Amino acid sequence: MGSVDLLLAVVAAAANLAVAAVLLARSRGGAAVPRIFGRPQPFPRLRAAMHACLGLGMGVGWLVKDVFPPHSTGDTVLFNVTRILLAAGLAAALLAAFQHARPHRDKAAQ
Image 1: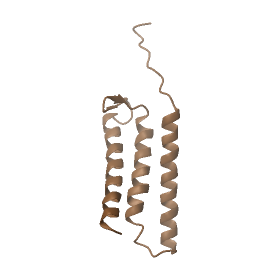
Image 2 (image 1 turned 180 degrees about the horizontal axis):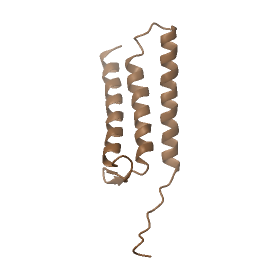
Image 3 (image 1 turned 120 degrees about the vertical axis):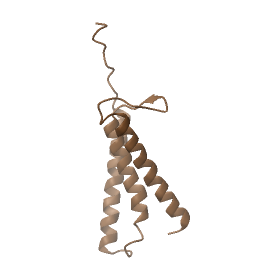
Image 4 (image 1 turned 30 degrees about the vertical axis):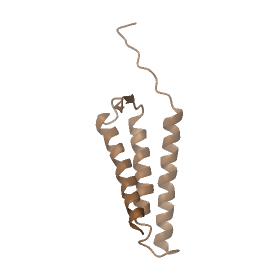
């Protein structure tokens, strides 16, 4: 693995896991809607799960791909786990994109 590949893998893993941690920390465990860069982020737990899956799938999967020899059992297991993580990240991204947050009604205004 070249130095550029190593750097990209570390950046992908660190950035996605950092965004997941920020989403969970700012939402106080999913109880509130956090604002990141001035925009509300609905469904913070779902978005945090998406970023965790993408970070582990892309970054960590990329980092450890050269640990096992090609076409070995370990390489096959790692490939399947990475594929499952990326598919889970894609499914979470689609769910977050197509679900619309319901506005909170102000009970005092009614």
